[in-house]
Image (tube, rainbow, N blue to C red; front, side, top):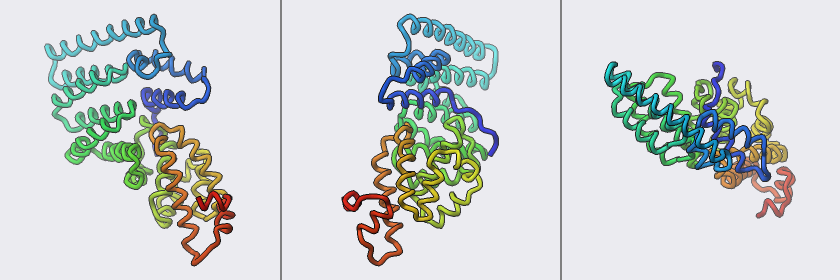
Length: 322
């Protein structure tokens, strides 16, 4: 895989805000980081909606004054493009306004301008870029409905005229959406198909993508596929050791070392609980992955005692029975 670009500043901010909400106590360092990013992005509306503690009334006024100046500059550029330049320059100027409104947290206004830009655009490549921008805005706000609404048109546009890179990006976008709505098996198909072609580092780092891919694959595909597509994948092998608990989780599951698997699962589930895309599926995933492991354990046996099985998993018979 080529050298990664950094995660989008907006999506990184969304991760930080979510993590702060999961902290049992105040985290002054994380709060300071969030505040600095809000100021850097001039995200006054985001601060109002998601972090009302972050900016004082005076700071909000300063940020809004800066935003008003930038918005006027963008509108002047649109007018100049309309008067003196061509249609492509007009579309680009309007698109820049949409991205600005998106950046500062004015979701509804940004969506309206994205739609305007989309209607003015004639090139499929530019239309796909706009659709991707809207999908990422939906991911920032955790709005699965918005993501779903624009995934469909993006698929149509990619089929009509998307290049290789945009096709690969769309697989990851759709996989994230499916993961958000608990369609783990379908999401796994898209992620597995994107391991060697991942180019969506603006969504999240590659290591995080591999974490998603592995935990979804273990609960979704059979052992033969798991070995071929995950365990023996050079791309997975290159980074899995850098992701806490993931290598023992995968290897112990595949090798049938169930007591080690349960220990690694506890570590993986901590990461699961602190991930804003999948945290709401925590209990469901724990139940499903245990069922998969129990079935895999039972497969070779005609009969086995509850005590033997409990010992293998490092559990009490009472817990296993329940």
